[in-house]
Length: 433
Image (cartoon, rainbow, N blue to C red; front, side, top):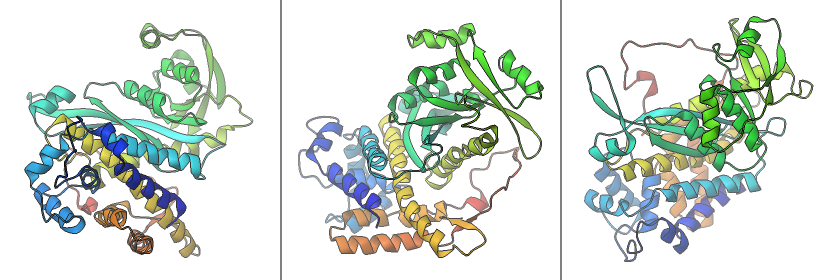
């Protein structure tokens, strides 16, 4: 077990069992003061264990394996969880992320940490409280579906979710993105966005915060961008002297005065001949040549695959309760679980690279299989106090992660497929848990 993993697991265990952590994240001073069947630490770990099967079955298996108690009822769990604030999982994730960037060698591009921010809507379970808290969507037949808007800030090179946000269904992705920007560490970052975040005011907001960006532009953007699309130029620096009224309103709401600023437009040609324009704050074309931006922007795909992992492997939309609090608990505990999973994946993939160094392809861990292997086993490692036994159990889990690795075939692309009807289950995406 590498120092990074060992430190993170030790940090989580010590934090969960600390009195200060309990007092910070219980709903009331009267909660968790007696020796109950489901103490505070066990409750947190249970919710980290990817609870996706029948709740009573999950409870019975968990307490049979990791507690002196033979069983706990679903009702007792539901009452206990209402005393736990979802902020517990946010703090645990923040502690682990801060530990990583402060004490580990992390990957960068030209000394930048590459971060992507993107959003996705989540389907929620049907209840009055959930609809009142998060809102809903309606189709042409007035059918109501509870929905929420979520957003993630993801480190593309180190595969870490720095933080996540969840809000009402009608919440703007820009609004959640600005929340991310206010919370991420003040390191040297390059934020990469899809064209849904190509607002000119949003670029100025980054410069106001002292942050760099790379954004894919829409064809119907400002006239300077439209003209650049049609021109033969490969790169151009333009100056933005004023904003449209709606853009100005966004800055006024934040109490920011606008001033003229410069951005660089870079044209990239996709493999099929399509032309795209990227806007960036990196103005120096000697230090950041045009040729690098195509591959750089392509890295943004990592946040798309992360959402796919959250939705299809970790089943983030398969919530375990009908209250707003349970939605928030499940949402943030899943973010922490995927970051813990990635710690083990990183170590397993280092060994795979060495074991398969003579192979035609580089290999990566199968994240779907590793999700299934992680369930129960990671909690068992956390509960194991003997260091040698803990190391042995971790090595066994890591070997399971290396089963059936996926080859990385660079340069592959697939056409977007549109289905007339949405399938909930796909034969090629059988779940591991």
